[in-house]
Length: 361
Image (tube, rainbow, N blue to C red):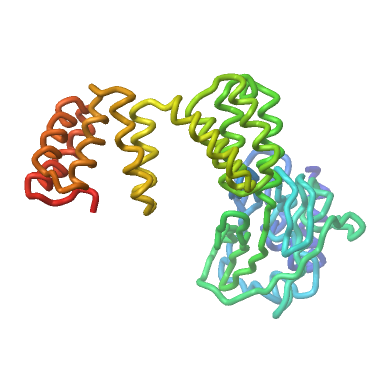
């Protein structure tokens, strides 16, 4: 910076011409602007992912330093950069809503107009300027209102994400003894669906698993079920498996197509391994459908009579009928063939059977 300009800038600061906002940026007009030298107000970033949407705030962090901040260093009723040095910026990887108002994906200059009882938070299309000195209302992309609240003291200005939920979070400015939150919401389902469709055009679209995962996500969220069914059919065309047939059955059930659902599930059982069939039956039992579970357990040994999981199924069947000696015998055989990591879970079940305690309860 030319010495003449430094002198003029120092004079302006000294005279108070660049009051308030400038004091949060310049220290007697001498903070470096041309060289890579540490600044008084250091740079910070904070990020939060909501669903698949990334939100990042980049800012500089002035300190209170014994000053009276609100209404003095930061005047009420005037546009403030909500930080120091260059524009505070906020970046959204996808479209969002801020305090219920839509805002497109992109990077924005973040400004505020503080007041005692209500703040205005401004998202400017200009994100590359110095502070708020060249702020132009015509470049506003969005304005929202925010309610300040008393909070624990923060000497250095800090942005945090609070009250994080599955589809929203509150971005909060904290400085001195004040917190100013504004809620950012994301249409997570729409964003994920767009991402999934794009991924299916890539490597994920060349396997049974990619289409199955996409359909499973739709089913889990009760969303886009008709297209999910088409994706599951594509998965099955790539490779018919228990997993995709079982998922197809549940999608059909969710669509109210009960007969087709039952047929798909029957085909899935035909494809299932002993472990898959046992796991499915056990899931039914845990969810309270013991009757159906015990209709399926006898089918497990028919898949592979010598598999340890088949002996576990038979142990459950015998325990359910009160035949504890047979149940204990089957459990012993299950433990003998089970992986070491599984043995530790089965051994307590054997002790219960030896004590004539039904392991299904």
